[in-house]
Image 1 (cartoon, helix red, strand yellow):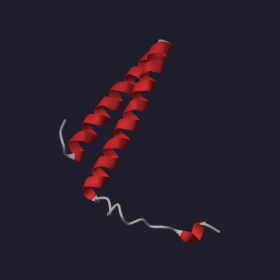
Image 2 (cartoon, one colour):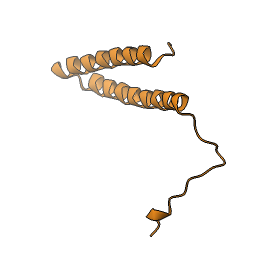
Image 3 (cartoon, one colour):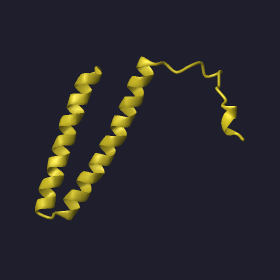
Length: 77
């Protein structure tokens, strides 16, 4: 798998497009099991993309020192 965000985004968009086309095709022929399976794959893709987004954000903006915690007292009223 490539490591740069643009290549990954293009690859993931192409895969998502293929899944959506599969879903549309299955809905035209009313293949419920295939449509349900495709939706399951799309949900998995969403989770994978969320993990990739988190990974790239951590690379771009490293996490602060774990010993430092910000506490917001304005919401504790």
